[in-house]
Image 1 (cartoon, rainbow over the protein chains, first blue to last red):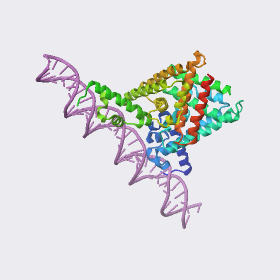
Image 2: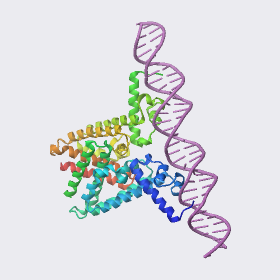
Image 3: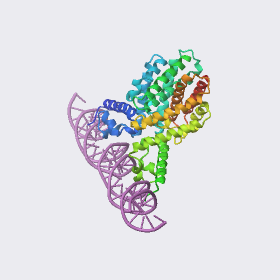
Image 4: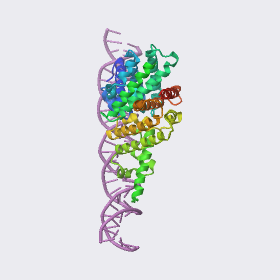
Length: 190
Length: 190
DNA sequence: TGTACATCAGTGAACGCGCGTTCACTGATGTAC
DNA sequence: TGTACATCAGTGAACGCGCGTTCACTGATGTAC
């Protein structure tokens, strides 16, 4: 049964959003097309009315997830608050609605360039926000971008390493706590 | 045709080493049991003479890969040299014989606890080496472990983000170069 | 040391299963008159 | 505005394929005497 053109685009968005969360939870290879469509409330056959391939959806889902991460970062008042939320236990334990970089950057390295391009673009947008958040600090303007890159890499690395340890293991928490303190100290240092 | 007991254990090692490299290149889901056995020079049927399951091999391969990374880190004269090699273009572009953490920590988060335990153990051993390498610096002994954790997370995060960008993209190189400088500066700072 | 037999590492065919993708079909939507 | 028809979003069965795993078999190795 055909559906309103507006409804169709809305459905496409639903699929992309469901995919964005499921991919973050289980990885690109951990979710099938049928799972994705079911999560959005459809049967799998209609998938190719919206996307050329699974890889095509992966790129769209990456863009969606990274925009979501961007919006959340923008919602924080300053860089220190962003870092504290980013390196919290609740973020580490909630992959599905957490940072797309931490959840999928490792997978992205093995994906087609369409996916990697979305990651690069997402990182650039994120850096712009981080630079703006840090602009009120006493740090030299010229090195603000460099500091933002370093902070982002540090945060992402800490979250990924923490998640690679067994749940409830002391090391997982230690990595999170140690890096949070180190990064906050380096932010203050300016 | 049966094979010497010594040859059998040697064959097992060959399989684990081949798996360690292939998993790093293509991820845990990107390599099948038949691929792994073929890479070691065998047919797939004999796999279960050596391992209870693919997950069982994944844990063994993680331990093997992390030991390799440990040995290479130990081979460096000091922390600064380790960081320079770690955040080099050749390391970024050579996943197969590069750091297991950077290649597979993202995947490990979704694997059974046996795999995650190997990662936690590997991280602990790596931290011990990093602490020793930094011991000659003027940094307070008490915070050496904290500094090592931060340095490791920062390095791993930078490599993963750089790899998530399209090959040859300026951002991929910028992340690598920026983080290398930042981390080296923070090492000097002590 | 030599013989007879059990063991088991490695082979290659086969298993059921889930994957990404295709297809004929349905029926409400969009469009031409 | 009303009618006739083409379009196409969504359905569900089907496709070929590769996956992890199992199995009967082979024949050299290990062992008991």
